[in-house]
Length: 122
Image 1 (tube, rainbow, N blue to C red):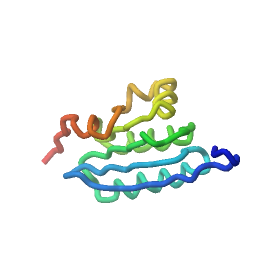
Image 2 (cartoon, rainbow, N blue to C red):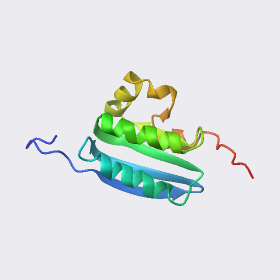
Image 3 (cartoon, rainbow, N blue to C red):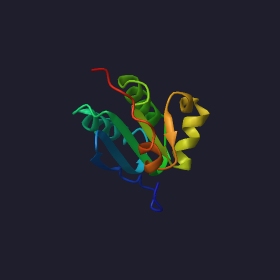
Image 4 (tube, rainbow, N blue to C red):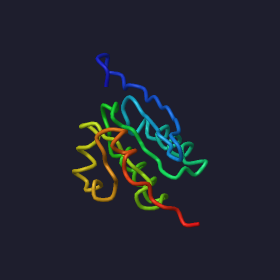
């Protein structure tokens, strides 16, 4: 919440680096903004990139609805193709729920991009 008590809006940006799509989000992810987060993930995956990096390093609040979006995305992609860049407010709920064992969580986008690309079957 901002100082005036209103929820901060969620801003999204998508860019590509080689065969990787990077979805960057800024703001808060809660029940109200989770549909926008889900729509952004769906759009980022539309062209079936080899890897999706979800950059949440500028997210200030991350609720259970955001965890659900990440879980759905992880289940829709082959192992290792979803990478999450997490700020401390995002990392905590991921670790508390044990999703860090399912998700590939990184400190920076560069860290996420430096992971060996999974090979796609021909």
